[in-house]
Image (cartoon, rainbow, N blue to C red; front, side, top):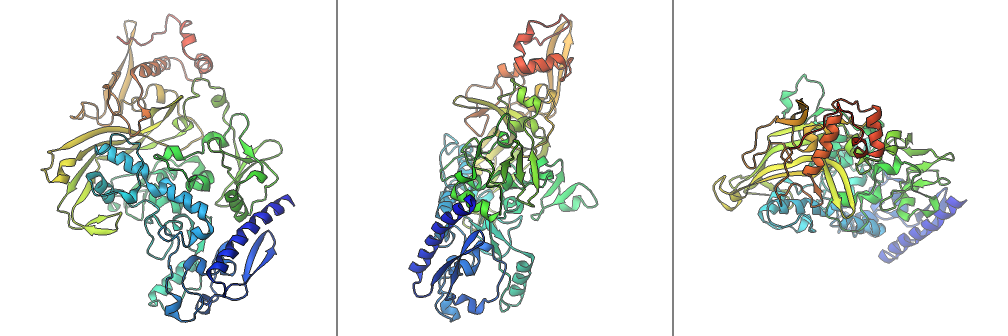
Length: 631
């Protein structure tokens, strides 16, 4: 009774709002009668809109967007009082939900959601613009607020227009059809538009019949979001969507992988090779199983970078002692709607809420004996969520190490990127304004590869945490080419690593040596890092795999010089609060690495070091132990 009562009062408020909207819009047409049907309330219109005179017997709508409930004009606008085709279509929105019309369509019933979306990073692209302007020297910090649709025509702005400005929710969806790997933007459609097989078939028939055979199957607008909805934008840049599926981008062409296994060609003809997928992907979990509506649409606040907006953490579900929870009765309206649309029934159980931000994960619950479960949004399958492993929960030394640092199996690497402007390109395309022009920024990549993530330090106030990092912006920019200088006359070089959440999670953590004696992990780049003992003196030696870059005399893929303090004031990161290890920290890490040359990582002494730290054990070392000499 508690559940039904809560839903009834909530829906009564919603129904009154919808009813008022229709009454104010068209007093003579709508006469609404509220009736209760099972667990939700519908509105039946005594006087049907004229739309259904031609578009009768259509189907495929989601339960809560059925024309019998909300009519046709609430989404498509138009004139519902006439049977004349031309008159009825005046002011009609064929593809509602784009942000340029969402205030008149989706936002009429979902104003809070629209407000949040307009301020979200998926709409503003603030961090993308901020870092690009910073790297081009057009801003003295990567932390300023921007909006992708307000950029002008500076060198950086045109770089974004030519290479990056496709992936934002303000990009208009102009063509009928389902969301695919090639889809970008579309406002509300980007996540909520779903075409059934019938709807796709009917659309094709409609097009091939010269638009005379009207579709009977209508696409659905609902909350059943698939990974395909995320893929178009999130398979670029840090390539989260492809990483999640275990796919690493290559520079190969489609014809180079004929008869080869382990490769996949995307719709845009990019070629990927299979490495290892995320454990959550192997379980059939979707992106939205973790990243709920509260996080995807945002909270209404403007953030500059994605790590500021992402609230969910691994430890929210894989908790140490007790999870953060809330009862069903404490859910916000948005969460109740999702709960209701998903037809969940665990309203008598505690629901997990994230520690940062406090929003609920409505597809989770805690049973009567304290076990945590997640209901997969793809198939409704019940997944038991394991708490932190014993070694993670008792480890005091690595408390400041993020889960993804140890539990990511690989991440993408990109080096040798060069950007130059071709003023003579005749068919350049402005991704923001969607128009052809002359002159275009072009990007040339030397190598795509993958490896275990490097590690960096996030220092923000009192927070100091080790997080994964990638060589995401080791690049040159020929800025002179944009202002008409000869190629190479004004080239800037940048060696920047970026914080990264790889989304290649595995259950088994990386081994100790992969952190404490792996040169790429420590920031030196790939190569051979060897600990040599000569006449009782221990010393680390490093031989780089890549040649030294002439711009700064570091290996092509390095972050910092080997056991040398970085230059004072040197910029090393795309964030002001994220940095490589200091020389002191490198020595501390390599001291443990020296111990691991003799002591196995699961030995008694190494396990003890996880509890009390290494320093207390230094007074107990054997005469046989040879620690590094840093002179």
